[in-house]
Amino acid sequence: MKRSELYALVWQTPLRHLGPNLGLSDVGLSKLCRRYNIPVPPVGYWTRLAAGKICVQAPLPPSDVDHEIHLPEKDTTAARSSDATRIQQVQQAFSRARDAVVLQPIDVPPSLDHCHPLVAKTARFFQSIERDEAKLAVQAEEARRLRKPFFGGMSSHRMTTGRYVAGSGCLRITATLAHIDWILRFHEALIRGLIAGGCQVVAGRGDASNTVEIRRAGGAIRLNFSEQVEKIAQPRRQDFLFHRDEYKPLDSYKLKLERDWHVIARQWTGSREQLEQQLPEITRALIAFPEAEALRSKLLAEETAIRRKQEREAAQAHNIAMAAEQAHAQRREARANQLPRAVAVGQSLATYHSALDVLSRLEGIAGDQPEDDALRAWIALVRSSLKDPVHELADALRAEAAQPERPLWWPA
Image (cartoon, rainbow, N blue to C red; front, side, top):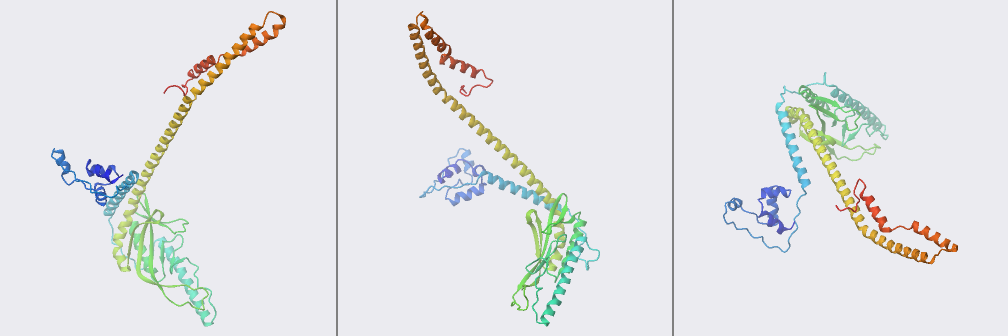
């Protein structure tokens, strides 16, 4: 709308009522007015006006251009409001679930004896990497001693920036071998706390992204742990056919909690000592998150169902409107065609009377003589096939009106 139009509106309706009608809050509308130098009623203006007192309206400061002001679409505003309400409900559910968690003391175990199957499988995965790395180191040293090129510089395991990515069916861990023992023991403590809190920790089935889910109260969320590293600058070795960059592991880790499509719900970062200190808080949050995630999924499903219903109703209304418009168009066309129809009958009527005139004159010519039998036969033939077009039109109109549905030319 124009700047002058918005100015007129804000002096007709209080901002707290006008804002929602325009897709804004009262604060948002006030900011919009300040941006375009539109004065708004001062505090107490509407109260004094309701009391019958004289209130002076501030004039609109002049401007070279009556600016166009773009207001948000109502659908977008409703979506933002719905998102805010859903987020608030999920946060409240998470807070209640977290506060209700009662934890026993959680300590990182000194060893991996009798550990969880997921931890044990992940440990075997990294142990196989250690054996392969040791074998490669021996081969590299032997090649260096013999001054031969070494062809085993590339690891057969999946890596990213110097860290190994655990395989399918393992915990989702991306780390070097330097601190893997502590990382696994940290996960063992975490999983013990989660199971004690009523959670299931389940590895994904045949998932290339190596998903590990934490399930509880009908909801599920994913765990992702990574070790932070720093690249080491070094010259390229001539005796290695495949060059592999070297990375230095840092005493810094990142634990991420993900939901659908790898959206990060929450994450914790810090050193080994910091993460151990945060372990009770992390465990409590991981126990509470699936319940909140279940509520979020339910609310999203309800919103999707409502939106689809609205879309179906809108499509149905559109189809009805289109059908009505088509019916109106057909009715207009049918009504418009009645005049040409009458004109055509009028033309046929002139032809009909001309034919009658011809027949009358032939009848006057024909006598009682036998040679006039041909005239009389022809006249009888033509007269039997000659029909009054007006009578035909009347019969057609009666037949159309007798149908179960009125003809399209019928008055609405």
